[in-house]
Amino acid sequence: MNAQEILRTHIKKTVDLTDEQFDYFFSFFKPKFFKKGQVVISEGEQVDHEYFVLDGCLKTFYINDNLKMHILQFATGTWWASDYNALYNNEKASVNVDCVSDAHTLCLYSEDREKVCREIHEIERFLRWRSNRGYVGLQKRILSLLNNNARSRYEELIAQHPELYNLVPKQLIAAYLGVSRETLSRLYHF
Amino acid sequence: MNAQEILRTHIKKTVDLTDEQFDYFFSFFKPKFFKKGQVVISEGEQVDHEYFVLDGCLKTFYINDNLKMHILQFATGTWWASDYNALYNNEKASVNVDCVSDAHTLCLYSEDREKVCREIHEIERFLRWRSNRGYVGLQKRILSLLNNNARSRYEELIAQHPELYNLVPKQLIAAYLGVSRETLSRLYHF
DNA sequence: TATTTAATGTGATGTAGGTCACACAAGGTT
DNA sequence: AACCTTGTGTGACCTACATCACATTAAATA
Image (cartoon, rainbow over all chains, first blue to last red; front, side):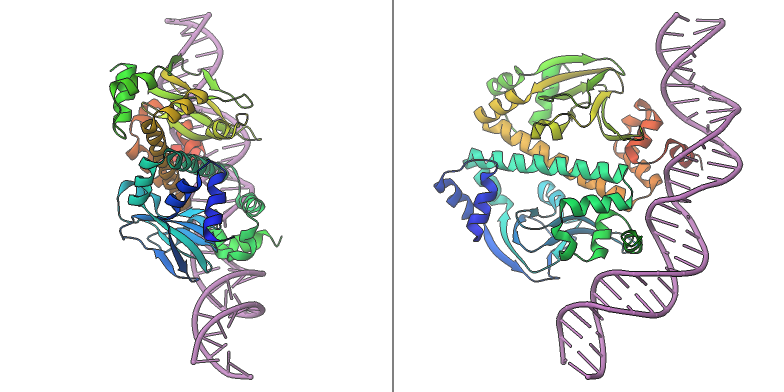
């Protein structure tokens, strides 16, 4: 599937667009390729855009004062990534985004996103539902952090996103789960 | 301020509605009063509505197999509460909502919400931004859970929501922070 | 105001998971 | 092939927080 088809299929799960509507929306997306390890967004910079991932994997992460990394999100195919706090509140980036693997993405600028939202009601609905699903997903993760120990959080993650098992180094999985890499390593060995 | 003014002021922070648009939207909200301790939504039931809190405080919580409670959200004035997983995915409630204190609310049914969203583009925009803000809020909470110990999570919560300090029993604060009530009790005493 | 019930404080003790240190693999790069 | 960088495994030890038990206080409700 090409970029256009991937995005179209993704949107169709939520709303129906005419060909003209979709083509118009799609015209605002700028293809962008990143290599493994490449920085996409770094702390402190102005953020006025977001990425739709076609293939590969991005990660959104925060580095604390002790240089410890915490991962907010892995974004694989058809996921979106940005610093949404910065994006929605017009603040400087407080988190970083980079590439876990080579990645093809489509870049969408806020200005264009808001323009198309105003012009095409269905796009606004699509983005409302995207946000709703994201909200529910984060609620589940919070419950998992509150309720489960390291082992079940790991099992839950791999069960729901088996693609991460081979794609992402275990130390990054650990940084996502909120556990040390040493503890994670011991988990699946005993 | 009466119910209408509270909702109007809340919406105005995000989008501008004409008087007719607002009155029309408001006509779908059903006032509902709950007493302290009263159950609002309980696990297993069908959820087709959400609540806008005018005053008082609701809590959304999950009870695990060991009967331990984890609190997803406290909803005070101008916050919204429901089981959003159930609401958006047409599933049975997996969490509970009840009242921390007497609470005046406005109830909005999904059917009506979607109807008005279709009819009034601005309402859809309002709800998109509501969801966006919620998403960013949950991201911050996840980072706080990953990055901070019990004490700083507590201090952060009280700094951001000082109204909870007197309104909500400490054991519920503990259940929100993901810490035992005993540990929380010891925190601010040493 | 007496009496239950809910909430909080505090000691003693247990444990999941963190931290440090170093050994070992496995991919990339020259 | 030799090298370096990045990732993983594992032992020894440490600590933040959980759990259990019971005392104390505050807040409903008779």
